[in-house]
Image 1 (spheres, rainbow over the protein chains, first blue to last red):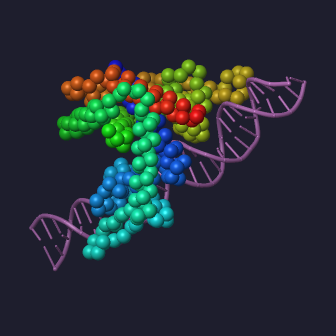
Image 2 (image 1 turned 135 degrees about the horizontal axis):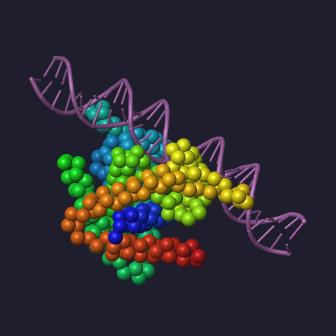
Image 3 (image 1 turned 90 degrees about the vertical axis):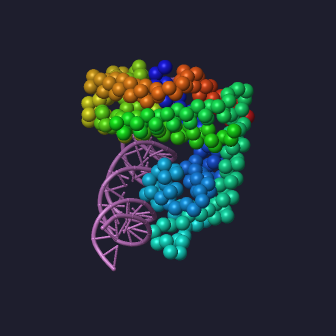
Length: 148
Length: 148
DNA sequence: ACTATATTGTCAAGTAGTTAACATTAGTGT
DNA sequence: ACACTAATGTTAACTACTTGACAATATAGT
């Protein structure tokens, strides 16, 4: 087994998944996949700041900063300051934003459940475990190499 | 098992793989991962045109067109016309380009073999089959839905 | 032979990210 | 109390893509 094949397969699969999600979201919620991720990630956080959100999304702080106004203009996200903290912005979904995030996430789950079905006979639970294990192993090996 | 978890896991794994490859290639060959893919994809093709290369890379024709000069300036790719065909450009790796593609691919394979090892006890061959099966199933389901 | 159709490569304009630099603010050590 | 240091959010300049329009070329139908 050479490395290339499995990394290519992974990239291809991820491409199909993400572009399908993007198409579904655009058609039904006028939302891109990355806008969806922004909302959903925000929703899953407790007291999110732009900086922490950036980290969770795997993008730069600058990227989050630039995108914030888009969500504010549409009343999806409320940006405020907490008294006594001049350093951090505080982010939260508006009721509208929360509704959109919830509905689109439910929709996507439902659609994908249909698409994943079809007698595929693959144990997704087990597959997820395997993938996580590989990821963890990779990161561990990378770290121990960097330490040396 | 909900959809989100496995798609997130897949995205995370692909991110680790691709950014690791990018780092290794930059450090050792002054090449980004996407430049590497450009060369390797070109090498694997028989009589490639920009249009077909774009399709294989999964990007637009415009993207390939814009990047070509970069590879020409570095004498990695030769762009020419075939007599009697005014429509298509003909692409081929120079000897230098071919050498770079081969060496960097070998290097990456070697590095990843080390990183993937470590008693992970995962059957990569089988995993690749499973992932391919899922991808195929997804595409099939998408097509049959679009037809309806 | 000739018109309609499709494909190719390129350009312009727009989008979403990046890094680097910056002022501002918060936390730390002494 | 105060100087360092680190972290935050914003900006500017850049990169790599996108879509849509375009002229040029090839192909097909009649």
